[in-house]
Length: 390
Image (cartoon, rainbow, N blue to C red; front, side, top):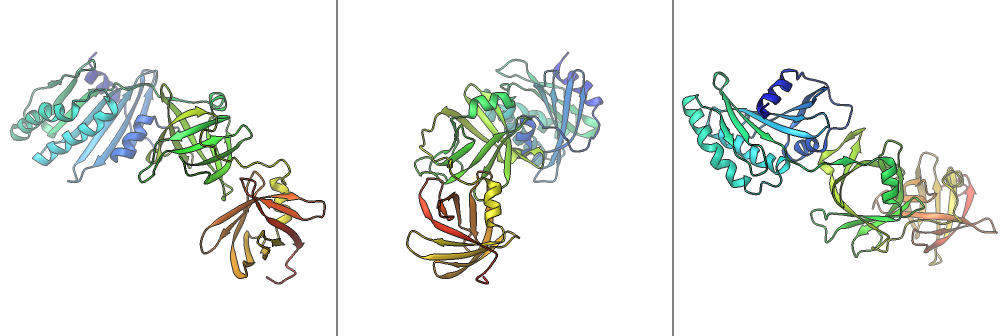
């Protein structure tokens, strides 16, 4: 059966569906994130599934797109359709095809120049006469594509087979084996001087930062039963999760999960190396108070801390999660939090700068404070309530 015939059979069954509760395949996420298409529906059957997407172009022409998957959940065919009434419509269809082919036929390196030469004459003739015969689209990577027309709707339909590497979502067992005592090296983001590296200590803590710039981010990492990779990054005690995919030998993709759905706009490629080549500090102290104890020490009490410089800070930790008092001889206020690793964090309400510290109890009932790199941040006494009226 020809590709176009196969897709037609599948599309006959396609009905609009509500937003998907399950993960969309990576190809669909990329098309949404990179090219502005939105999923309209999905129809699944014994032979596979078809995703329907659409978008408005700059000239307000609507483009429809269908991606067909086989029974192994591998994408096999793309259908792009658009009404052709003007030269701009033809240009839009060609430009979109050139963009999408980088995703569905990554090995077709000549596509950027080949597609215009193959499609432009046929689309121009159709726009002029409203009549055209199907035109094969030869590809260097297997089965050809096809350009067909529906004259009574002034519709041009481009079918192209999909030839991409398999992309496998990693499960919990695979992730645990891969991540512990290993570093993720993320491809540099725009404006970064180098790659961002995150080292995962076997203790469930992480240290991270740009290559060569030292530890700037710290927190905890975990793997959920459903395979989500989650981190809690200081100073905010909330988890950010992602699905991780293997996209090739030694190649991986980080796809954030936002409100139980994959976020295609912020996916990042990364590689994995064992050990801690960046020399990052993962926060850990065996003598530090646990999170529940730290919260009991702070909540509704006053921290009187003698700084290494000799200055005395006084901060009242209001049960609502805000603090107020005096730091470095100046009025201070902001929010306080407790991380799952036991650190208490202060976030300045004006500068938004943060300070996170482990609490280590002394024999005298005070607590020594240490940062993630085990540097002293002073010694504190915690008084019940707010005796200074802060």
